[in-house]
Length: 366
Ligand code: SAH
Ligand code: SF4
Image (cartoon, rainbow, N blue to C red):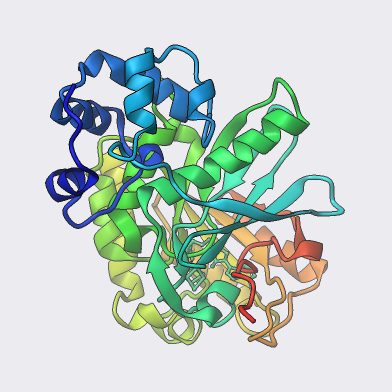
């Protein structure tokens, strides 16, 4: 076994992308072991300890790793663990939602959310600290962009949620992952894809790829790459407007990636993956909630295998719009349904602790 200096590792393996044990795919872990002249058969017990037993800092408590390999893992020449501490945990009064505030060594913070009930627990993960897309009604957009999360930091969020689940609901485990937290996942494509590859690995948490949803504001180059990615995750696209003019006022990147091109990319995705595309529409009173908007939305999606998720606006500090009343939401949905499109109204969960759609942001620094 060769004990390479950590400088050697980073130079040879992670030239531009610092990584951690949690952020290594199985094949990457095998490659690291090979470089260190450790037999790659040890990849399996190490991967299992990190990704299934979720030993975290307690690597020494892991079962199945031979003592010399264990010692190598604990030496300062091996790959470090992700540094992401759980600093706050806020349960919602709704009993279905729990928000986690996680902090990283550079003092960057992100939020992740656990949702659901036994048999159907979901983790809502962040992909970036802040977001560069600037959607006017979104708290993450309002805070601006700080940095991308690494693969390890995306994976570690799921680990935190899963550990809490095991502690509070013995026998339960995470079933679903939605990339609907802070940031635009397709704007941080590779780390997001690597993280999902790790989380869906059957040697790890083994989340079914069909139970993973990636939500995008309409980042077309990412949708095109996702359509050609080997795994079939569920794609959700945030629309909010049925014309460039209307959508551009809410979603500034519509100017760069206009609606017709976006819908073309969605059609291509649906055809290549033989998959339904989910469209999110945040309903804002007097802005995009009329019968006419519903009609035009339905026309835009004609002929596509599509499902519409309606999200009544959640309050954020930087936007003074209102959600429509329930009757308006139902009328809007009825028009969509009448056109033959399936739709769902997203339940308002976690609003009391600002864990709802578009409400996530890092705590203000003093
Ligand atoms: N950046 C991705 C992933 C975040 S998902 C995306 O935008 O799709 C967050 C979802 O909540 C998106 O559909 C977004 O449009 C929606 N959203 C943002 N702010 C909201 C708010 N204040 N109320 C309701 N939904 C909101
Ligand atoms: Fe970014 Fe999505 Fe918020 Fe838009 S809605 S600012 S893309 S996180």
